[in-house]
Image 1 (cartoon, rainbow over the protein chains, first blue to last red):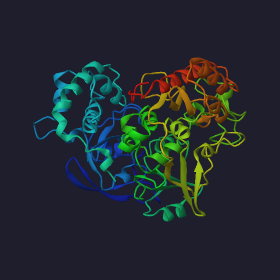
Image 2: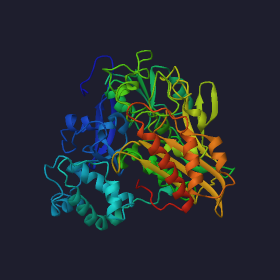
Image 3: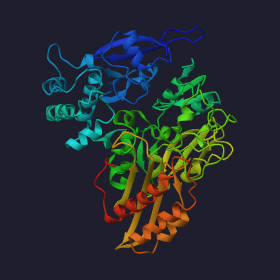
Image 4: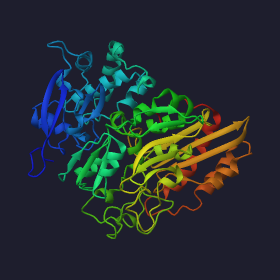
Length: 175
Length: 333
């Protein structure tokens, strides 16, 4: 899919917050969020694995929740708060989930890692993964071709208690 | 992806006035964007409905629950009202897709997702659902994942949803609005069997938008089970799934629901078979008879005959586990 403009269909102006920075952008309606990040903004941390929502390598956080950027139209992110793997560290200070992945050697080739980390942060905020089995189930949207799963589970398990303060409020309080 | 125009209406009436055969409504986009990438569908206009006020989960005056069409699958599955009063629905939703997709996918959109038949997705092959009249290669081709009930000569596709199997079992009602006004569609009538018009998955017209799903007052908070059988432990479509719900007095069945997924063009129920369970004491023989009756009309294809035996065992196991009491596992198969 092309992100180039095509004659006869105007781009749409959108405003969003990306990794803490307000941005105003012009996007074609058929541009996915993943293509906007990688091709328009040179944020290539989010990976294009399958481009069909099956592998999770493109996982980013929208308004705090993990989503597949490859199945999200950029034009529908107007007003959103987006965080990609590039926005997790505070300066030189890694996010606890990033540090845990390093500590546990939770990757081999590293291609799925940005998506795994963003997904694991989303999982921590959801507050539902209370056992190793639940971590495995709730990380099932992220595939690792190298098979680093056992170390990924160990990393997530270690980082979860460090992220208790980030848990979402009970869903019943939402509109 | 074929270029299209994009519109974001601020009211339901504005949205339905924009809609026609060449347009599509979009909410989560998890299935539609994928189908558009593959040129399986190529709308000239997308109508983004995410600004509409269809986000609520509220109790109704009759004691049921009204679920806005835009509530995400994740928010629905984990909403306290649903977890406590309709746990069968939570269990079914959490058995489907991935956490990322459940955060994106909407309640209304879940009903409208298309079949995952390989031939439907492959624009290099004929498909009566994609191109009416072009033929059905699945009937004689690879059909391991296809229908064993209610199929036709022109289509053997299955409906892929887990959520819908639970909604069928719970007698949900679909609220829709179109240019001609509003109407309510009982869940059993919402999706269609393929017949000679497999291009139509459901009975909506092009301008009609799902606005809400209504659940009747809860009756199956204790004895329920959504059992999903698939090729891997998680994140795969059902080969066979069973939504079983029982209302028991001691071990005597007061009310019973059994809906099947992965076996037909729509969630499959047979109320006559469910009626044979009422007034009976829970027993393996009773459940086995019900399973035989539910699949009596099954007409398997070359590669999916295993679904008949698998389906019967899954029905017996789901009913047995439902009868045994509150299911504690929300997500495991």
